Length: 425
Ligand code: FES
Ligand SMILES: [Fe+2]
Image 1 (tube, helix red, strand yellow):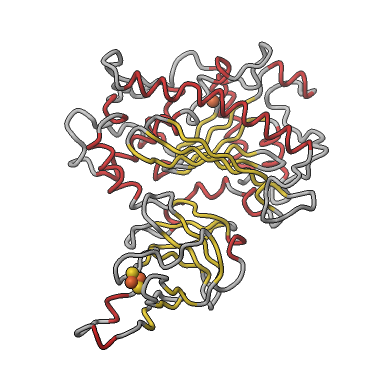
Image 2 (cartoon, helix red, strand yellow; image 1 turned 120 degrees about the vertical axis):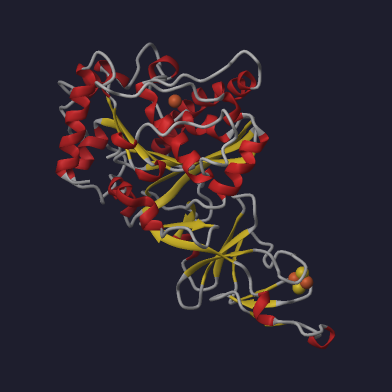
């Protein structure tokens, strides 16, 4: 992120503190229809037009460092396989043998120069998924081998992360991310490692989980500890990017400023972070902003990253069905201890354990609302969802959902009117 963008964020924060109403001319939102979170038909439209067409993170490039290394990816509800080819390229195939559909690999991760289905030994090469051998060919009449390659999904990488997209006609990853890439300098640190991961399943629609991280209107009400809130939501500077992505930079509260020795919300500096190593890929301006605010980025549809100068969790929302979501969070940072690389929980040092406990506590505070909110969404008591100016990232997120589904397909009464196009960065 360059200095001009950082200056803009400072100016936006000052403006947000000073205003007494939404900006002049800001649109009035209609209520968001409750059924967007409860309708099976709407969920199926999302599956078809969002989850089958969006770029999502599947893992890290160093998860499959050597030719032939692979891992399975089942988070999109279909069996996929990400593999590094003999040419070093990373590709994504469906883990679906084109004979009778058995998985071509059964291990969650492994290494193999050929993908040999364990059922009847049809065998595919890993650079193109081409079918290269099968037993008893004489017993198939006119088998067209070229029509029996492993189906592919799109695969690309950004800053060490592997993204996949089931839609072979989707725009390139970098077009999809667009200007939002300016926010991802912390991804580029060559020493990043997975520090720990958590996973919970929550009985609510996936959007209930995502929306919890798109505003800080709730922050001091559910995340205050001993009467102290870390953040001051009134100064939050939001940025809306194309394709539903967004960011939210929220200044610290007065109590937090005092505790850190900062004079005011814009007195940005990097405090002593010991005993943690600092992410080295951050520029000085970004580091001081991230150290002195809450800096959170959302990539549509299912990823929220609250950055820190010592590392960051990636929160992922994976729909399981219309009323069930898996919420994963994986913390990445420059790893500063020796341990078993394959066992990320191996001897987590005390400073990382206390960071994990702290972050998990915040996640638990958010989780507590999710199942009861879904119950309310499915009861007759809630007739519509009014969204305020501070919550506009939620509106932006819903606009993108409708854009991808296509206005003509959104069921009557469920559409979110596109109102924010003039407010994009
Ligand atoms: S299902 Fe794979 S070889 Fe038969
Ligand atoms: Fe929260």
